[in-house]
Length: 317
Picture 1 (cartoon, helix red, strand yellow):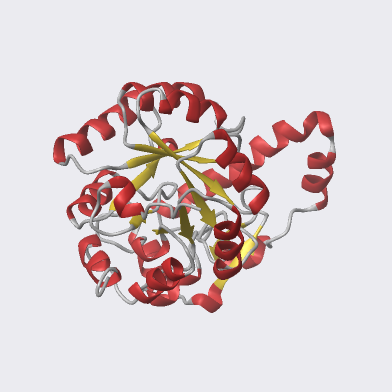
Picture 2 (cartoon, one colour):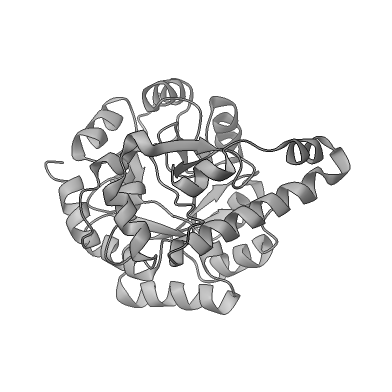
């Protein structure tokens, strides 16, 4: 079997690292700083409310650097902007698209016509094989140490399973905080890594100072899994508010999600409400703090420029 390319070979970058697309957090300043520091970065299309704002963001990054960057696209019905966002990404020819929460078939077909690469979020072998068969250029293996919407398998076990059964590059996502973590992932067969949590407290992030300080003040023991916020499992900091509202779906939410006719609409509503709570907490100090983070929070000791965080992360690679 042919050995897959590493992420830096695949994209022509210095280090095999993607600064993860983080809902509400990733912005053009972070992407530009990442490109300057020798890695790549992506941002969620949903971080921009209008098509013009999305276009402006892509144009700003392209004007700053010719290094490759990507955009994360939610490809299921919970994203009503999916079709228009895909059209814009194709038209502006971003370097790669990271798909989440649905079938990437249409994205792969459209993107490959003009040479855009497609990486697909997966949490298990079943979906990994599906996206490989569809022609994905790489797999983003989301493990149980990822921040936000995480998988259920350890980084080691997920990487072993995917590398033994898939022939395209695998990008390990979750639990990476230092260069030793990158080396370990690549020793297990990863082409590179996707890293999010340790960048939340960077100077460039547009979130509130309370959120950034929480990244410093809390640790791995304070990270819990909640299905209450967005309807699917998401890792958050165990603040007093999160403790108050609980981490499990209540009976009504459970009942509605079991109703086939209502399921789609309830899921969209829960996700929308959860996103609004996260948005409110991210940008303002409030007792209703829903701060998303992963176990790598343990390595966040200060608020500092993104380029410094990257320099420490890739030291010795």
